[in-house]
Amino acid sequence: MSDSSIPAYADTRKIFQQEDIISGNLGLDRLPRFRKTLANDEGSVSLELKFTFGEAKERLIAGSLQAQVNVFCQRCLKPLAIALADDIKLALVRDEDAAQRLDAELDPWVCEDHKLDLAELVEEQLILCTPIVSYHESGECMNQRDYVAGEDAAESVATENPFAVLKSLKNSDTSD
Picture 1 (spheres, helix red, strand yellow):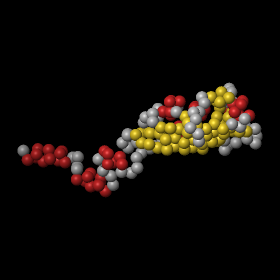
Picture 2 (cartoon, rainbow, N blue to C red):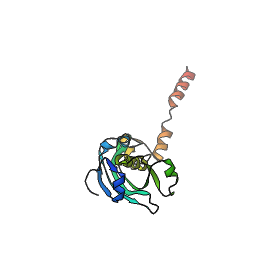
Picture 3 (cartoon, one colour):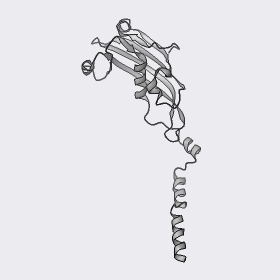
Picture 4 (cartoon, rainbow, N blue to C red):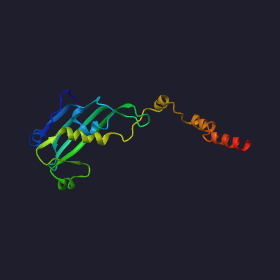
């Protein structure tokens, strides 16, 4: 994929007629909804999109995207670098009725006019391919927070009875 910047819009009348390919990088600053799910603004998104006509003359957008971003670890709430990748296979339609008529293998992308917002399309794909829960590899978070896991956790619970203080208070009341 090239290092060029992705244009803001594509004219759907031209891009499909020319069977164009758009590839390059997209800044996180152009993806506000996706950026809200991240731990910070560090990261990169690269993509390649091919615009063609299908057998039934439907307008197809196929390609792939990759991203390196930082999300929050759900165990320790510290930044965690993850790699995202997704294959894109969409059919550009004008309305919901046209989307209903598509083959089941194609996902619809509704574009009512001739301006296709490429950042919005990429942002939606990134949101869909982001894992719901992300966390550091086993042991990393636990070492940072002094967590105890496995058999050690069972032993620490058995030795540290939280009601031991109450038992000592009860024993001191009966001895008076």
